[in-house]
Amino acid sequence: MTMFYSLIRDVQDATTSGSTKRQLKALTRITDLFLAGSARYSKRQIELFDDVFKVLIEVIEVKTRVQLARRFAADSQAPPALVRAFAFDANVVVAAPVLISSTALSEPDLIKSASTQSQGHLYAIAQRETVSEAITDILIERGESKVVHAVAKNEGARISDNGFRALVVRSGEDQELAAHVGARRDIPRHHLLKLLEAASASVCDKIIAANPELADLVHGAVTEVIDDINVELRRKSQDHVKAKHRVRRLTDWKELSEAGVHAAARAQDFEKTVTMLSALAGCQIEMVERAVLNANPGAIQVIAKAAGCSWATAKALLLMTVAERRMSKMDVERARENFERLEQRTAQRVLEFYETRRNLFADAHPPLAAREAASVQAMLR
Image 1 (tube, one colour):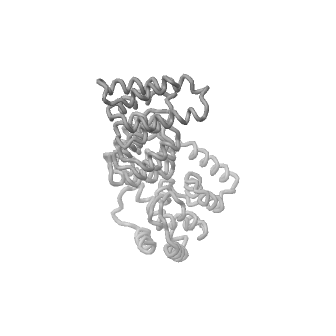
Image 2: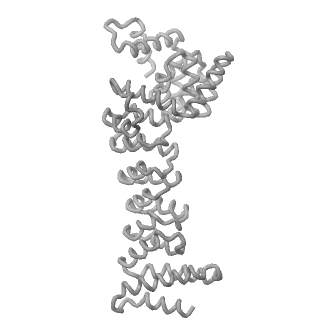
Image 3: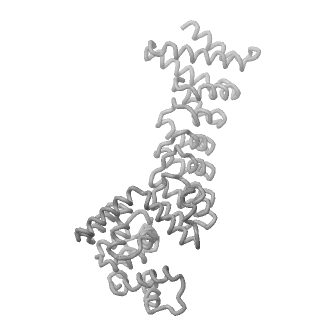
């Protein structure tokens, strides 16, 4: 270990001419020495190396730390203690290289950094080649606009359902973010539907541009474009295809029932719920999707009543987390009263009216159902 202590003296000698270069060379040799003999070192010797790394990183100047961080960021065999010391450096220019690139950092290291450090550190983590759901959840929660945009654009970042929910909410006031989120290939369909419903025409165009295979579907108003996009999205969604096949089998066997809708809603299965409820109510699936995702509880109550569902099933639909209704006990009780007052025949006529309006686009003389629709909407607000 004589060479080891000699190298430490070189690092600590800040008065030597060309000290930065000498410190860098000495620290690099200390690291090489560690790597060359790490398999033979005792636990005490490894702890000694760790302690030395921590102390030396604190005393050398920033310029040297930056050079070392860049040197070891690409080295998968770099001593973990040294890499952690760089990662938790308060100076972002030191920490960024290892936070972006180092594979020597563990998941707990990255979680701790994302949970405690500055926006600059978070931005560096968001640029890693791969980022776990646990980390992106923290980045989305703590991150400012630049960080969240980096997460949304990073194809190697895995985003949880809650993460997508938060991104969609933040996209409401950030059109650029909406375009990044909508362009992601891994966004769950129910989140994309919600994003498209709230997005401006220009943002929808950007999302379509990111998916060239949808370009030929673009025509007419934004709502029509969204409906056409949804057809394509459903066709490509394995979950939706499976749900559709299941509903078709149940229909053929005459076993499609409210119980299936109730079970799917309780299980928070968006695809099964909307597919079954659409078949049971005899209305377009687009209408059911919007109703399930709408924060206003009125629309889903009308469809549930038209389908002949009980309050228990209507309640399960209202409590689906995809809509983020966050209904209080008082809200639920008010919804129950409204649902029980609503007649099934009236609900069916409301659906017929909306279907007619959707197909004809205009009605010079609204039928009686229009007045019923208005009264039902007022009642359910």
